[in-house]
Length: 454
Image (cartoon, rainbow, N blue to C red):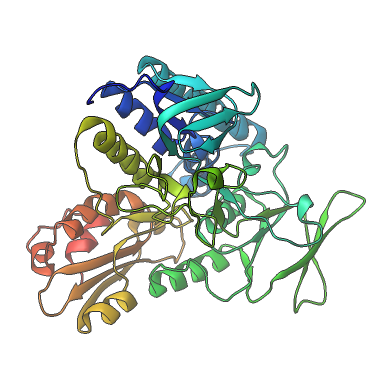
């Protein structure tokens, strides 16, 4: 760092101690900056506290339903199979506590001062802490407040829950209605379905998992319907009514009778958490969806204020927030002009079965390159044979017909995300279909289908 500016209380003040904010704080401090961070809820952010991590643990817990059912076919005798929601819920939340403590220790060990209260911006170089009323100045301010679940503007919406509250349900609901058909909706649909709840997914349009390859979306729909998940498309919510017995009625457009549920989970998207931050006091411009507008360096329309992660108008993924936080700290305090490449970002949906994708879909590739070749493998995973399930995996490769370069890989099947992470390296590196063909298959495995596609 070029030297500390003691005209300010801190060199950097970070609002939000999630993945991006914590990484930026730690790296900036390692470069010699005096850093403070404010977090109004818990250190760790959405991914660690109320998102990716606890959700994945619920996914793992729900997988045992299928594994235990299949165990008998492999010679195991499992008597008195029962499931206790409270045990799983409490174990997940205990691990969240552990991670919260770990993230807190990271800040402490890197000499980052913490304020566990809400902070709002009062000017280009100042913030106010809500509880104490203290005014703090900083040479730079970084906004890393993430995104927040969108709730519907309908009568009775207060009776619904979002992904924030789902990890604290007092008991496993017998009937669940899920509003939305994006990745959060379908992941929780799979969890509750596997644990024994009756699940109905309601969507205002006829498209699920917008942005993913159409063939994978169709396969997931077929499999999940066979597993008992019901879908109602083109059915916007009109209202929610709470009955005297505590159950809920979901009234839908074009439906004469309501759906009755114990829980209605709203998973219709997330919005950047910028409301009430005071950004206007510093001239920070927002987009139509409340997102902070930033340039390639993460700088807002106020030169002393930056933003990273889901609060911006860029990619909303935890690994991206972490990279943006690191790049910001390295640029501003470390003298390293690091650029982030947003091309070929792998993603996954931890539905049951899961999807994973990297690069262009077939439709995107045709629009951009015109002539493409599509290779696929439609197979029955070996683990499904003894499970007596007809479910089939599907791997799809999209290739530029002119150069033979692999433009995209799309997969649905057991362990697809684990397999795709390694395969994404090949796509990012610009390898060709011939490179995949030249690689010897690892047999017997599902991953070998990647080098056997026709």
